[in-house]
Amino acid sequence: MVAKVIDGKEIAKKKRQEIASEVRALKEENIFPGLAVVLVGNNHASKTYVNNKEKACREAGIESFLIALPEEVSQEELLREIAELNKREDVHGILVQLPLPDHIEEKKVIEAISPEKDVDGFHPLNIGRMMTGQDSFLPCTPYGVMVMLEETGIEVSGKHVVIVGRSNIVGKPAGQLFLNKNATVTYCHSRTKDLEYHTKQADIVVAALGKPNFIRSNHIKEGATVIDVGINRDEHEKLCGDVHPEVAEKAAYLTPVPGGVGPMTITMLLFNTLKAARQSKA
Ligand code: GUN
Image (cartoon, rainbow, N blue to C red; front, side, top):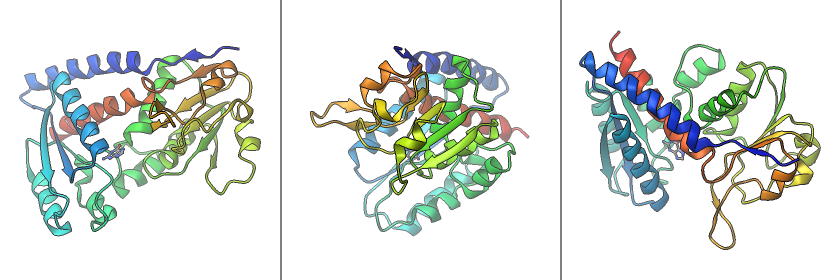
């Protein structure tokens, strides 16, 4: 079997056009969706991500406000900035780019963001709402994965989904979103014994462990759907995912890296910002 490639770029393009059209409609009602992006320090990867987010906002007609703070900024100062953004009427969404420098407690910062502006879906209130199946902001990467599957027509209900990786940003919420859609979910991680035993039973594997080309053919059942969330550099500094290219010979569907989950993450950020702006009306 040769896997069908799930084209994240194409799905993202279609979704971003829909979002742009809804942004235009909202502007007719005098609501101008705005996203504040807080960047602390000089992390090169974070800067690139933030630039990409700002560019995507512009293209969708969403205003973006960059708040760039020095590496040495105190936690108190950062919390003050967030309190200001919470109050601003032209800011509907707030995103603090992670990771933060070691002297700042990430948890405190995330909890300082108003849940109504938490377009990353990282605030405990939004996570709790997601877990109990209430309306909330959903974390962008796992949300993007669900939209990709839906757009590709891959049924989730009743399927066995194995998540490899248990980060707060991807693995944990991804499992919850699949459960909400009536999948049977197994979480695997670095302490899992016999990973292959588990992943081989999966109808859908979500690889979000952050290790280049780690998931091989022997991990995968013939005809499975494989979602690669990894963004790594291989030994030649080439961009690669968590899934080895050989898996394409065995899977029925596979997401590429780049051009798979990546473009969907930013798309869902735009979607969440639009949602926050719309809800600000009420
Ligand atoms: N760092 C890596 N991924 C993310 C993300 O989705 N949101 C934020 N705020 N920071 C990140």
